[in-house]
Length: 199
Image (tube, rainbow, N blue to C red; front, side):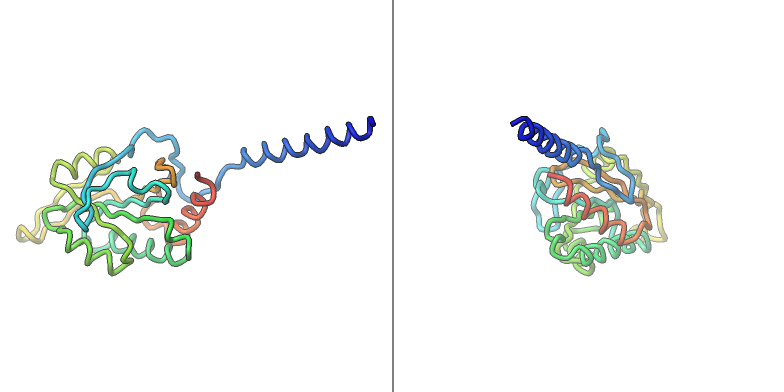
């Protein structure tokens, strides 16, 4: 009888240990973990289909957020290309991811322009825009810097802007910051890890 009790204690100790160990395993990311950051709490902008969007609309999906503009000559299309490649690498899990492109050039980036631009990379990508004040408020919330640079004519200006990408987990918490030029493998690995470990 004592042997049975001893073995029972050993078995339950192992079970509790395994359960505890499972809860303490932390996800491994290639990008910068910013879990617990006190910014990027919410937003309210209009998508290119005319629907007002906020963070809560995307609960249940990993959310990828990038600030840019459709006339950007280099960094914006490069990042969108990396994200398009990452979605392919994720396979069926890509359905659990939403990429958002927030324009910092709302005077030129109409909903139709955003849709056309993003569809060239992935039809599921969504463009977000607002008026000048809404754009400024959104940028401030995410600590993004942008500044219009005058061109040869009013329609040929450029916009200097921050180039990092934010990623939220499926519960709507901001978790990762991906530096410009990180590559599609970093996006794919870290998004997959968030999908695996978040609620």
